[in-house]
Length: 290
Image (tube, rainbow, N blue to C red; front, side):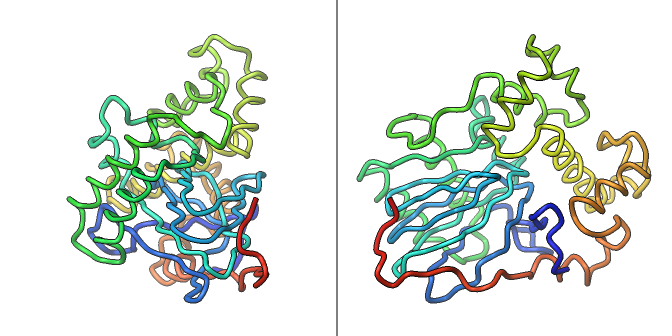
């Protein structure tokens, strides 16, 4: 699958077919391997170790440099757009249910976007932890410890480089994570705000419309149900919150560029997962992005 419907592919952060629940991989410009604009069900953190880069996150372009920590919410599309020649970063991802069990009462914090500047001690501690387990398998315990540490750091809310999300966005996001079947009107009633207000703040904070994001959550729930053999294609559509299988089919085609049946063919899924983007833009003279 080389098509990118609506500008983003669905690509799982965790390796397909593995039992891994956490994973850490590294990126440097010299080795390439950049993904196209994509989204996935796993929350993700990027720790910039050296150099600088520009990321496309929803409709926003974010500049980051060594010492920055970025966080992408499940279903939020993102892509690495441009790098300095010395860019080096760790990408850290985790199974959503494991993240919830680790963070417990603070579980929602890992589901929200982030751009923060780390203090030296936090930066060095997270870098050491990541270096121990990068690109290794069988690291669930160490990966869970890294995830807990990284999210404790982000919970301190210091040196934040991105304006905090509006309270309505945070509340709506938490509600949708628990139940993607909720309509916009349902969400508005829960948070006691006008539907137009929650849509406006959500679009600003996440970079994509609330309706589209809710559909992505439903799609990811649908994929989880079918992958786990908890329901067939038709029943899973209802359980995931679609009004009918035909609605699920339309959304699937729009967001993922294939029908549900095509998507679950092993070859199609693997081809989509292994899609890579063209070479990055690079200016050898640029050592930092401001």
